Image (cartoon, rainbow, N blue to C red; front, side, top):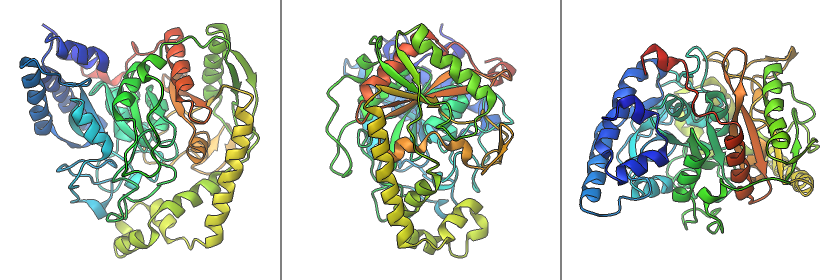
Length: 484
């Protein structure tokens, strides 16, 4: 008999295969992860809205299909968490905001439609900061999400609950969204693999696209939806399901000319790789520098690549990024909704909405993005991939926006996020892969950035590094506390 713990430690590909072969039933798998959720949720708060009955009904439907000899789909019976910024029909989508406390969408996001059609079993909505305007996991509505590697620490954000749930084995993978790093940040802090495919690979709707919902209709020129998982292959498997064009997303692009899963299996010997440990200007925690540098060395010693230290040459573009966020935000609609509720909302979000943005702010930001894109394509013409730390620090205590001192340098509380948002501004594919651990046992992420539309190389490098330096057998200490 397969135990709950054995089930919860299986990757998505293994689970799907066992369910397809009837070695496990979808109901067995669902009940196992729901029992783990019951044990861990009081301590992790990864799920703001668990959906056990929705999950049980979906699992029974998968088992009925398989027992009837029908194809249950490539994800048939596999549990998944859905980030609470992503619309789910008939399931609350609160987005961490009191303004949407009772909001229940009347339609699924495109990715949710595709996941359901592929047989995935939704076990709940995962926690986020308010409307996703933060790189951490606390909001005014739900308890704060905790990092399974150290529950005093943040799991990152804005896909906070998705990161914590996968790291703890409550689901083998989860949906995240990434407007400035929000798939990659929690993946780095939780010891996971997460990938933001090229802009337009994964169609978005209604998020960023539906004017009926001011809080939802934002970040259109920056947002990506992507997978977070314990293995590279599981993220590739999810991409094979959720990627592809849709007329509801004007930014969506034609389907890829490669197989996502097969792309993870190739040899990357001979690739030319740039490594920037600090963009040439950023403060980086010494432990992050150490762990990432050791991981980068494997690309030469183990994988046969040529690695050069090189910085793209742009400066601090955080002001440009946040002006683009504001330009993508329905300021009129959100200000109208916010009126009278300011004290109930996240202060940093209120500040962004109340700021008197000018047309010049927005036009300057668009020009800044053009400059950044030009710097990056010229730089990437010399290299196949660019490696950086994913974030500048390991996980830090909850209820902070970020540390104001990094490597003895004073800065702003968002400076630790400096590595991720450039790829949102350019639309390039980017992944965070586990690089190793600090001396205190906290995960550190390595970011892999590809050329424009070259998701295949990012997946190939990710798979090659995973084979050289595997990590999936290491689990967070919180599980030992509960005998899991």
